[in-house]
Amino acid sequence: MTVFKNLSRKGRQHQMISNIPNKIYENWRNQLHRLFLLEEEKNQRIPHEKLLCKIWMHQRINREALACVDGKKLKVLHPGFLNNGSGPDFKGAIIKFGDSAPVSGDVEVDLYPSYWHLHGHDADTAYRNVLLHVVWDLPQGASKPQKPTLVIKPYLDSSLDEVIAWGWSETSHLLPLFAYGKCEPCLQEVAEPVVEEILRQAAIVRFQNKTMRMLLRAKQAGWEQALWEGLFRALGYKNNTWPMVGIAEHLNRIREIDLIDGFNRNEIIEAVLFGISGLIPKEIPGKAPIQVAQKISDLWKIWWRYQDSYLDILTPQFAWQMSGIRPANHPHRRIAIAAKWLSAPEFIFKLESWFVNYSDPNHMLSSLVSILDVKDDPFWSRFCTLNSVKSSANLSLLGKARASEIAINVLFPWFNARAMLSKDGTLTRKVVDLFMNWQYCVDNSTIRFAVTRMFGNRRSDLFKNLVMHQGLLQVVEDFCNKTDALCTKCEFPELIKRTESAAFS
Image 1 (cartoon, rainbow, N blue to C red):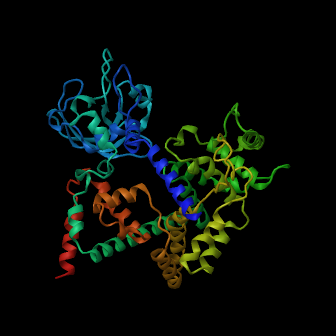
Image 2 (image 1 turned 30 degrees about the vertical axis):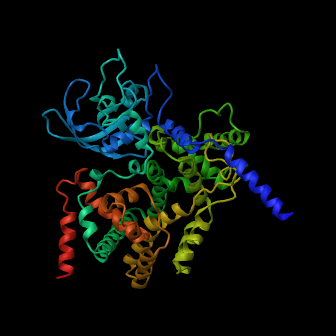
């Protein structure tokens, strides 16, 4: 019976396979290719903006004969670097217009020139450095573009179908060869121990700089205020550091607030922070969940009683950068966690105890998260923002990645500054040792881009610890940010070569 069952099963399997259409995978792939196309428009296929960005980044155009809509010739010396955040699509491009000297600026990519106005770029200060508007096509009868504009449709180096197929290939996801830095060939040849030592020293310099900034601020405002400003700056990273620091500068007026009946300390401080930040919605959204409506109502019930005392320190709403921010990093959530910290009993004492009592970096992060995160808030554990729908899963206000960044950029420099001022060598050694051996490595777009630009795709194992990350960030700050996309006059490659020669002489 078992044999017949097996035969029967095999027969069914064969029948199932025979029922699968031929070339089904190829059809799937063709459907995916269509994701790079918008719907047909007047019998023309229009590529998606994502594909246009790939075309520009890899310069899949006939570069020798380019001209703007107004007829002026242009030469792309560097297309710039893809910007995954808010603002123009490419930063730091270098373009030569006609016989003029090359200029550096940003590039925006759109389907049509009219999108410059339709998308509000003309009124957005984030786009003031755009020197070239790259578009797919110029519709017949369209008005003259405001900005220097390049239509790339006639300049494609292959047919649109071939470019679409390339857009899904692995090649299109790699950084173009011309986007590698001038140091990339050099760093591929330099012995790894030399690279590691240089980056280790750069990381120490970075840590010392953060320590000195913390020490200077502590001398001006006191240790606690310096810490609070550092914490708020970390919560605002990277788009909203200044609004958060602006609020932190007035915490002495917020922490000493008088309580009112019917609300606890956390609710009052949270409402005041939201009020000062200008982030309480003026009206309750029509389709808002009942919990959101109640939360906004409660914030207003508290804030209207206190607002007259803080009119001189209100933050204008336009100071906040909302576009391109993940819901988990939204200012609403950052204000909420800040309120939790400010209202928590002995919050700073808990941080001090955390540092003094723990010595194993493997366990320090989890214990820090237990101090910084809040998991049981009835509203914020279910709603990302004051205008979001309810989440089916519990939401954390602060995860491991942000807690680790706070340790690296705020807490360790703060403890180190205190140790330096008190000339406590034991404490200094402890904090430096913790920094150098911190296990949790926070990855971000700057790190990934810098690794690829400096080392290609061949040295990723070198950057799996915090010290290498911090060293790389310092190199970017000291060298990459001081030059242009072509690495003009950058001395880093030559300095590396000299160091290796001296090391092996």
